Length: 153
Image 1 (cartoon, one colour):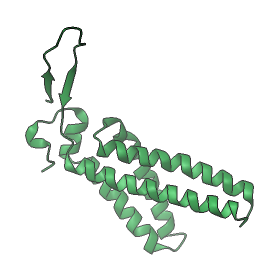
Image 2 (cartoon, rainbow, N blue to C red; image 1 turned 90 degrees about the vertical axis):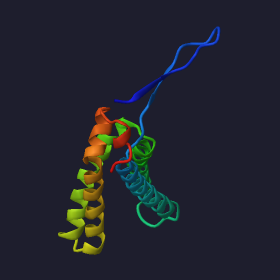
Image 3 (cartoon, one colour; image 1 turned 30 degrees about the horizontal axis):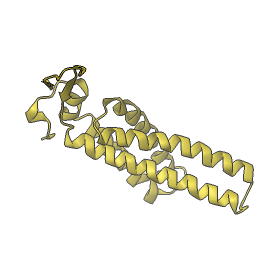
């Protein structure tokens, strides 16, 4: 169980309780992977925006695509940062993102004939899911970890 810390109050202070839970290493690693995925998606949105401004293609479509990718991968980046910071809410969206990206990896590997892109992406997605569903990460997500589980070993 997480340890609660109670602080002595001075006159006029509002009582607070802080919950002390360490984020397991696998969760932080998964968060870093997801944050990099988000940054890569945002970089792609910037490339689309530059193409639209440069007039390389249907401008309205490229602006729309850039905006779409910025919103989607902004959320991916937020989920990654959330995991690194130990926010439990980020685990659910990250799981969905990885499952969707496994589909993208499969399409890149098979029908698109780009296994050099698809296989590493698929491996990263599977690794992220394994990290998020390991014993230490599950205990952390449930709020059931103790001090010995905090390291993720």
